[in-house]
Length: 130
Image (cartoon, rainbow, N blue to C red; front, side, top):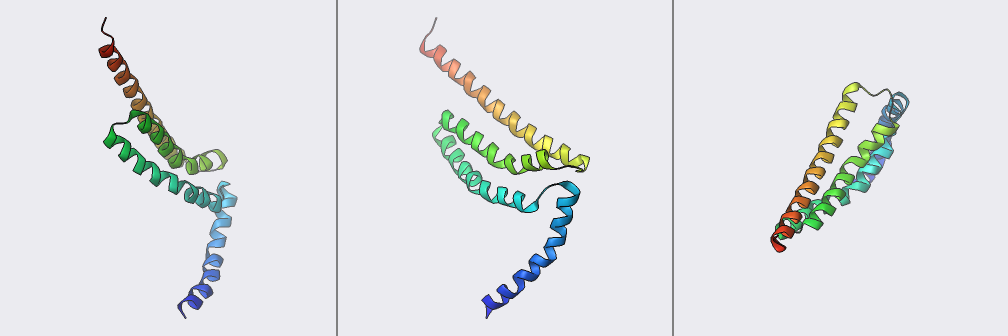
């Protein structure tokens, strides 16, 4: 009985969403289904990278931290890059929000990489005193 109710209401849900998706596609050039697919495809990488980042942080493995920070960054921004590159007629604040998100993620990754290099240099200096 419940399955029949869900099966019967699903086409009506699609019928109600379809005009909105068509208007978004026409006005902004962004296909909501493609965005949703990108979000769903990136989600496992996003959550797995969080798990691996925590694990690498506990073990203090800087190589793994760098790798999984990059995976986290990519999994976070790929759907939004789709909007940025393929969207048009977007409100100015959408570009601002996307720029802030991407800029903050890039800056965080840069700081982590810079901190890693400084740490390696100090360890090398300690290992080979002048």
